[in-house]
Amino acid sequence: MPEEKPLDFIRQMVADDVAAGKHDGRVQTRFPPEPNGYLHLGHSKAICLSFGIAEEFGGLCNLRFDDTNPEKEETEYVDSIKEDIEWLGFQWAKECYASDYFPTLYEFAEKLIRDGKAFVCDLDGEQMREYRGSFEEPGKNSPFRDRSVEENLELFRRMKAGEFTDGERTLRAKIDMAHPNLNMRDPVLYRIKHAEHHRTGNTWCIYPSYDFTHGQSDSIEEVTHSLCTLEFEAHRPLYDWFIENLDIFPSKQTEFSRLNFTYTVMSKRKLLQLVKEGHVAGWDDPRMPTIRAARRRGIPPEALRALVAEVGVTKYNALTDIALLEHHIRTELNKSAQRRMAVLDPLEVVITNWPEGKVLEVDAVNNPEDESAGTRKVPFTGRLFIEKDDFREEANRKFFRLKLGGEVRLRYGYIVKAESVEKDADGNVTRVLCIADFDTLDKNPEDRKVKGVIHWVSADHAVEAEVRLYDRLFTEERPDADKEKSFLDFLNPDSLQTVTALVEPALAAASPEDRFQFERIGYFVADRVEHKPGEKAVFNRTVALRDSWAKQGE
Picture 1 (cartoon, rainbow, N blue to C red):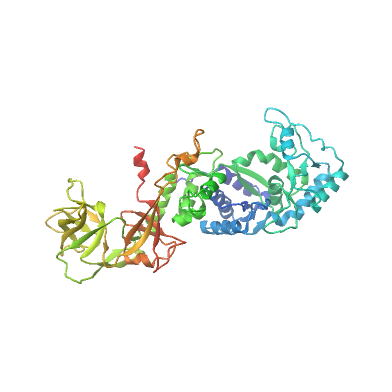
Picture 2 (tube, rainbow, N blue to C red):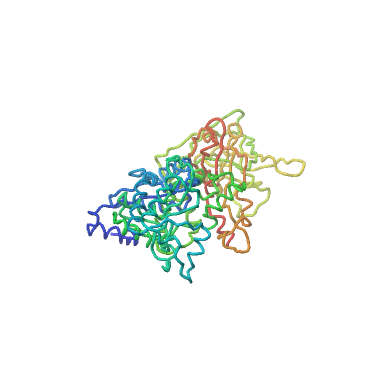
C-alpha cells in the first residue's frame, strides 16, 4: 500500500479537535471576503482550504461577507465573489453578512462600555497615530480614556443617532497603550461614516471596525476553526480578547501562508492601477491574476485546486512559480480538452493532383487521452492552409516539416511532397505546390520513412477567428521588488498579440468557455464574453503547449 501523506498542521489540528470531541466533534469554517473588489488567485488557497476542510471532516462552511466599509462595497462584488466560488467547485452552507449582525455588534459594544472596557474618544486620526507610539516606544493614554460609563454610553448613543460628523468621535477598546502588540493599544471599535450601505441603506451611520466584526461574527456563527492568512497573526490576541471579554462562543483563529505567484502582482492597489490606467482591458482581462480573469483565460478550476493541494499549507510565506500553475493547467487540459486544428499564420498549399471539386471528410480524433470523446469529420480538399513556419524552401536534415523536394504527412490525411513554390514581387512564398500520395491515407508507405506531421485547414471550409495570444503580464519574476523602479516598468510588451486565424469549421460552433487544444500550438478557450457561436469566433490562449519562458532562462 502507498504511504499516506501526513496531514498539514491545520488539518492535523482539526483532526485532533474532532478526535477529542471538541465542540462535540463539529467542524464549522467560513470564508469571509470583503465585497470591495474581485477575488484574486491568492484567494483560491483560502477558498480551497476553508471549504475543503469542512468537506473532509463532514462539516459546514459559511460564506460571510465582511461588509463594514460602505464607501467601498458594492453588490456587484458580492455577486462576482459568489460566482467565483461556485466556479471553483464549492458551495456554502449559509450565506451570511456582517451587516446582519450590526444590531448584535452594537449590543456587544455597549456591554464593553458598561464593563468599563470601552470609551468614546475625541482624538482625530492623526492625533490617534501620535498617541499610539511605535514598536520601540509605548503609546500614551487618550485624554478621554477616563470618561465615566454613563458619559460613554450617552456619547455612543448620540454617535449612533447621527449627531456627530464623520471622524469627530470613535469608540475604542480600553486595553493597554504600552502593549508590545500595537493592535492591542486601545483599538478603534466604531467609527462614524454617514454613507449609504449596499444592504442596510442609511440605517446606520456608525460602522464597526474589521477587528471588532471578524471574531464576533465567527462567534455568532459558532465557527470552530477560523482560518486566516499570516498577516492576521498579529490580530489574533485582539480576536481572543474580544471573545474572552464578551464571554461568547470561543471561535479559534489559525493562520497560514498566502498564495503568491511569480510574474504577477497581487496588491489590490496595483491591480486597480493596471485597470484604471488601461494597461489591461479590465478586471477579467485574461492577463490579470483575478479568478474571473483565470476563468476567461480558460484555466480549469481543477488545475487551481490541484495547485493549492501541491503547494500545501505552511506557516511561512513563499513565492510560487507561475510555471507550476501552468503545469497543472496543461495536465488537466491534456486530459479534458478536445483537439482541433487552427492555422495562425497561413500559407496556401495546393495539391496539384487532387481531383477538381472533390471534398474528402477525414476522421479526426477528439482527444487521444479519452477514447469516449470519439472522432469528428474534418473536410480535406486540394487547397489547404498550413503554418508558414511549417515550410522552408531549404532546410537541413533535422527539419522534419515541409520543404522543397521533401515529404510530410498532413495530419489525418495524406503524405504530400512539395514540388514548387509561387512568390510575390518581394520574393515571399505565397503558395506551395504539392502532389499527394493517395496510397497513404491512414497508413505509412512501405518504401520510405516520413517523420514529419503538420496540421492544416481546408481553404474552402476554414472559418476566420480572432485569436488572442496571451502571455505573462510582466517580464520579471518579482515586478514589485525593485525599490528604484515602478512595477509598471516591467510590463511585458508582448503579453497580448491578436491574430486573425483560420480554423476548422467545428470551432465556429463552439460554445463560450469550451476549451480546446489547437494541435501543435497550445490550449485555447472560446471567449466567454465575445465569442458568438456561428457569428463571431474569438479564442483566448490559455497556455502554450510548452514553457517557452524556461528556454529563455537557460
